[in-house]
Length: 183
Image 1 (cartoon, rainbow, N blue to C red):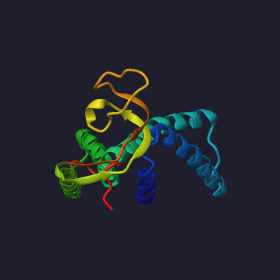
Image 2 (image 1 turned 135 degrees about the vertical axis):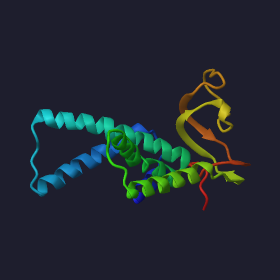
Image 3 (image 1 turned 60 degrees about the vertical axis):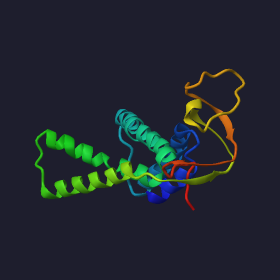
Image 4 (image 1 turned 90 degrees about the vertical axis):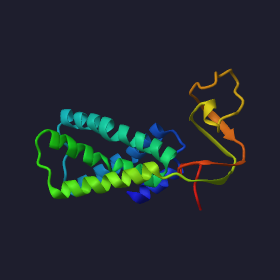
């Protein structure tokens, strides 16, 4: 999973829905072939369609959001935040009457400390950004997207198109996101 996340981060500026579609179109047939080779059979069509719907909504949407997180907060933070999901499930279970064990308490405290460390860590340094050409949602007011448009776009309006960032060197607080990798 870590290898997949690291590789995906390198292309996280690509449209996340397109990436998830390609991953699904590759992983689906591969998993079907492996299951068939191991002796599995297909369920009835109705169950198959329901499972596909759950997969698109539960896994597909979460993977799109994860890729967007890779773009904005980097691989380590996205993985750490994504790994909090079981604790949301555990909280719901406790709310529905499940027992709180000491192991659950220790795990929750450690996860909380880890998330707190990620959220409070800040650093800034001189950064030399190489020119980059890509397509993603942005607005003028973020300090990185001051480029010309074919049609007028009001400041602060989120919009999307292919554009080029010029080379720039500056200092600002940042996460190790797609534009701020430390080598």
